[in-house]
Image (cartoon, rainbow, N blue to C red):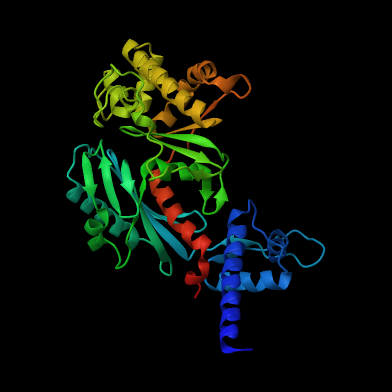
Length: 400
């Protein structure tokens, strides 16, 4: 065999091995229950010997781990259950108008360390705020167990992001525009760790589509509505966030529900977040900005007319905006996150009734409203998940 042919064959074999390593890692991570080496072979179509060799390499590299064997007696030798490893992790960061968060997540989906800080960063200066986030991140990284390697970092921001250039183009509620966070964060992060930027709602939606790295969530097609000080959104189809041609899709908070409505920070009028955003809701209910959604619910339950009217106004505005999205995109489920998730039990009945009238296909498939989990910083988790997806796609660089 000529030298050139030998080199080409070696390259093909290396590429095939890399592809198979990724397939095995994703197969284990996607499993509802820890599979054995034999299970991996069956699910991937590989021979047992090939699957075993690849598993051994991933275990040695810390990307997979072996669990305890089932103590119950069974015929034959029981297989060793395989789990995602705990020696590779990612840093997820989040900036919102009312929250800073730093969280480290491993391949098993476990939070290894985190810090969350509530505050009011509406109209803040980006430099001091990002420096504050950097100090938070440094504290979190100092608490990561020894032996854990960072695969990377992600940063969730509430606005329009140019991920390719690493620039936040505009975040109306923060009052920021044309900000490059990586340079400000660099002094607080390990050398070479440059956060990948993403939209807050897109990354929060990922935590619904993916409950742990590589493991599918309960919904594959849904509209995620992120209730923060403003309102963000993300459309998820077949488990993937639909980002649009430039990555700016999903801004449901700036769908106009009343052209004659109040002015919005985005420059338009009557946007959804002027009725359903947290600050807007609390102001309409006569409550201070730092009041919790539960206070709003208690006041409404006690018969406070302002609280009841605020919730009704939010429900009507949501019905108008969401019906337009569902009619255009044919989405079966709306998942409410943030403060809207905490209000979902009260909003759901009337909102589902409104959508049943407004959505053309509701006669055959009535739209469902569900609440997201109670995580205060889901986008930080989503940012880490987004980073770890790169490890699942190409694990070779992380093998010892």
